[in-house]
Picture: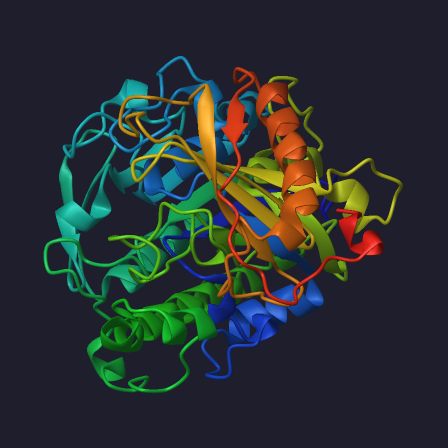
Length: 452
């Protein structure tokens, strides 16, 4: 696809870390945190139902870069680097003559030190840290250049990365470029276990809006949401600055811009950490795309995952999508063309458990593999039912229906669907032990509701 000037479009990925979908106005957040994202989603293409298929930093990024499931690319948990032999989206843009650049958090190389060139995924220009939360704090940002020389960047961390991105865009404005900007916000600062917003935003969002799942369950939300929302607000301002830069340089009509996140955040309501579960609060992320081919695309309700981003961007740039990529381009959906689009998504869980889940438009069904080591085992041959949610009546997953006799047939059908999805990507066919029955009261599922 060509831009308005007849050349291949520039491509920018604006990638955040641990951002819930419901931080955005277009998903109902009332705090006006994301006016730039909301405008982008309204004027461009809003991928309303977008999910991380592996809700933890490293694996999600490996999936995003390769278009493959974590059990296929091998980086199924943090600490397992992406193979230097892996083909990433950058390699394909390089081959097409693009200038490629990476700025920010990588998390796909060995250790926490500067990233060796062979582990940089093929990106030509480099200003990054493998684990940015360990080489920086809110107002102290250190990253490493192509020579692995430390670079100190001034300002609030999100602003510092945005400044670097603007410099890259200005420096490469004459020829097509592919830029991946990977922020650490709104992820927590690990060493202090807090969410450091810009100083000017401290206290602005204290005791404001709390999503229903965070209000229902015990966790850290009431302590952390103020900072978290402040970080989201500054990210959106950074997005606006990048959009202004493209307008200023007359690149806005020639540039595809995608906004998404690696996973979401449940604030310790589902396990002892912030993610690594099959719940919406772990897997659902805000995603929008604008620019050539995506402007006026409207809101798409099909179920999309991060696996689909790389094929979509290659397709939109007029490049062939490699056969080994397991995601799919959303361009046929944007063009309202007939597309045999999957009506469910597969979720893989590591580190907290060896878990799997399938999500449809209405239902979510999850299983766990007790006795297997989530730091060593990519998959298991035996699972036990753990979750069943009716997302139509319970979008924040407050009532687990697993084991309800009234929902046994729903669970059975979803179990078969999950097994088909697992085996289709190369996992061994497992056995799944049904959950013990529990009283379901007057609940029932009508025949038409069994159509998943």
